[in-house]
Image (cartoon, rainbow, N blue to C red; front, side):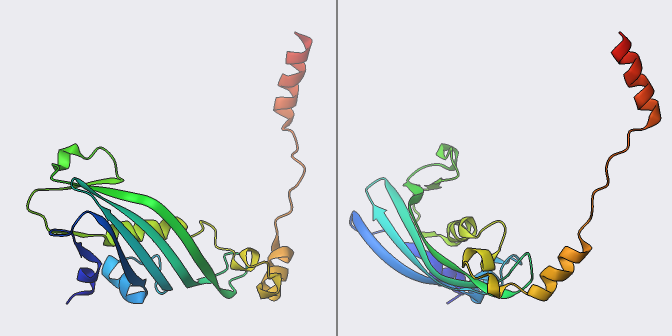
Length: 179
């Protein structure tokens, strides 16, 4: 069985109701999604599927950690995840693709018996990663920051000079003041 198939949830023949699944987001997950943005993680994914006669709705939750490098000082740390999103996406059963007017709504045609949620899982995970990774700051542990790197950055910081006005512009300014 391919790793990709692990994220396929069969729904045909299920009675309307609530169904719970658990998956793992790790280095193998990032290999199947074929991304270079992330390489490893130790995260559990909890999926709750609510099935009705015409649609499926999915609640997603993640809990775990991912190694990260601080953008400020390059110290190795990790990001903690603990997030939940209700109705992260909805799948309409028996709909044409043209019926889908939103990214959160997936159309499932007649005859389909399962849904693969790999892309939606990645989108949810990616939405939980901070845009600027400063684990030292997030964990309120500034001792994690590499002090040597921070000292070098402060020493090299660019000092702004007072902007000197070009004499030509100064002359034009005087003309403007006279009028």
